[in-house]
Image (tube, rainbow, N blue to C red; front, top):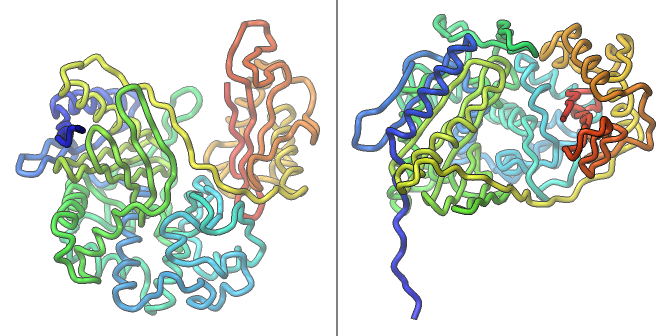
Length: 480
């Protein structure tokens, strides 16, 4: 006969968690940055550092955007109506038949576009629509898999303005922030004179002030500024919403917040020797199921000058948020390390560390066109022979902002010399991973772990080029 007694979920050791956060805070201070964090357990006093200092929270903004769309849906917005019917100016674009629900759940089939989208926040709706009419390129059919795309969330803002005649920021402020008492949360840096400065870290570890972007059509993807204290209240509101979900009327605030936290689109499975974990995307939030803790709701954020992560545990009444002020600060890793340490301490094995493997859900992809493959080839060859005219032709707006060209050129030259690259790549050496991403493996580093310098097994050295929605170069990444 099977044992029906369930194993209780583990309450992490808060002292062990905060010890990790304190170490990470000091490490960032030593670099010249600043970390804010908060750990909240219902019924207990919060533990927090820099709790009232405003930071940019980047893509954690998507949880606020999804809530605003939930409010509009409760008042008549059809989440399954094609964009072109809601915004007629989108007719004739590749997004015309996509829907709000697909955008909310990252199912539009448009590719990950962080670096570019992060730099065009102040674009106007008319400019975005004109941009799309130039021929945006999807990488997959809609609703066939998970593709994290900021474009979809920007379009949610366009829809919100079109169907209400109000600005997106006014909708979020009036309908979300004010009712929940989030008085230190907003969009305009001018409203936050004490906003912590963000920094870019160069290859030598030096910090440089990051450019401040202003509100615009891409604010729904990552434009919110907030504090640990306000985010603690935001997480707590979501925990409240899950407690009596059957009692909530459709369209009520609690029902909207509860609906945002449901699992919609499977992303990946993670496992270690000691746990299993599934990851789905909901509406502006990730939904995890962790064998150690039960449900886990979270979202990360990365932006020029900032990195963030918030996470809460409905079965445990626990929540945690970390905000850093360097570009794409690895806040998700910091939170995961803190949680793992708290779990290990709680089960009496404080030295135990989890080694995870990840299996992503496969999804269909459109084939790459010849023009995109050629752009990848030319961009990869900039690593071997940096041509200013080619860079001017290929680079989209974010590239030189993310790393000044002089620094990029010096880094490329040093890497190419280290790998012994002495010729340009041919088309035959380009592998298109998606319609907008391609890689090249350095000759002599052949994917079997063989290092051309005779130094034994190792990961192959690769150049990865990602393109924006129009096929311009967005990133050129170097590995190994």
